[in-house]
Image (tube, rainbow, N blue to C red; front, top):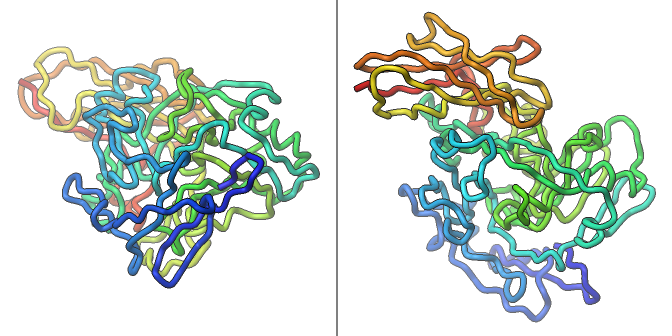
Length: 433
């Protein structure tokens, strides 16, 4: 972690009794040991497991202490579906997503790989280096004051959204069973990453990528390391990519990457790195675990424990997708006119051109009404009014994008060992009374 003040500080984290890693802990600050076996997530009967031999870690103390991971601590709705307390991972009920095109911070899903670092704006800074002619170190005040400010409404989606459907095909050990709520939309405000890269006089040549580093430590990584990722330079220079410090006109909450995060519209949420502390222009993608080994589509026979760096298909652009937000699975609805509502989303600036709805498991279809999208980089709401009679009701929805592409039909064909990228047709089953 980089702390912008007059006296450099060092942070120490303990992993194994025989190993000490230094990532920046204030000298003289006593780390507080935490027994992860006792602090693991216990909701839904799941316990957080670390790789073999990893049991305790030091926790930042004093003015940069790690806040306690809990739904109330992060200002979240009490009905959030919590997949892990430490690190905090949660999604809202889909009924909340159906209520508004913009998701409140209280309902916005949270995907973390490490504990949430508490960093005040005055303590935050960003280094920009690598293939640049003018390396930079920017404080929060400099970032806010020295560059033009911009806003973008963008949908972020976890690459594991709708993993629960893949789990019904085949087990996926060690992965959170995300349901349908690991997707949300907000208005983000900050400065364009392109403007910062321009001030650093970034080199322009083929094959360059922009890598992001953050201070949150991910125990699941091999070896344990801080979080990171990268995007191609061409995407980084696009006007929609921000270094953001506001979310829905409020200061960016800590659970969502405050004080400053990267927002990469049109890409999986994993590339929108939170608590960003360093930007490096480099030849080739990041070598961080979460770029080189995780967030990749691997063949069904692959073993995640032995996969080599670079294997599989690295996830970047969001896949064409749609979902049904109302009625929810298992609901009871009244006979007569029923308003079916949902969203469609297409990857990296493409648009949703059509959504079809079926009430007979795909034998016949009717076109849904598409409503205006909040922005080019967000989901597009849709609805369909249908007449329903008492009895079981099965609703299916599928989306087409502006290139004529259609979602795949079944999650069976999409199953992969990481449980990523489920964009099969959406379906829900309910009962009409």
